[in-house]
Image (cartoon, rainbow, N blue to C red):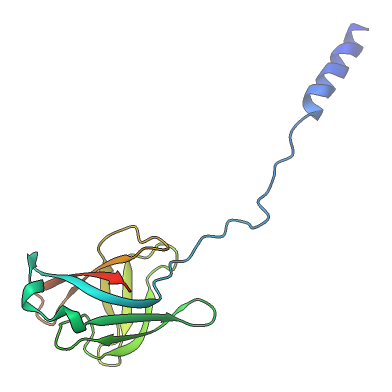
Length: 149
């Protein structure tokens, strides 16, 4: 009888395992969306603030996505402000769509121009974007602080 009771107790203990719940949405991660218009607030050249010496008011950087929410097109109104790309439009993409650390610009002059995202992590719904890039003169490192319009 004792064996019978032990068997019943052990069956009750081992048969009461919880069934693991699986998220019906899976493990989807949010992609970063920086679409829209960005204004230039601050420029550092080799760590020195040069904002007062440059007309930042006319600089505008626009990012757009295609219909499947993938980076697609950029255009820039520069008005003499140095930037990573020489032309004012082209295509762009992140180095990683979920955890980006760089933006790659393609502008038909220089095939792949990289601007590092200096203020990581870049998160969804963020209104500040800080980019770093080298100019044609390899001794100049620019840091742009942009805010979303």
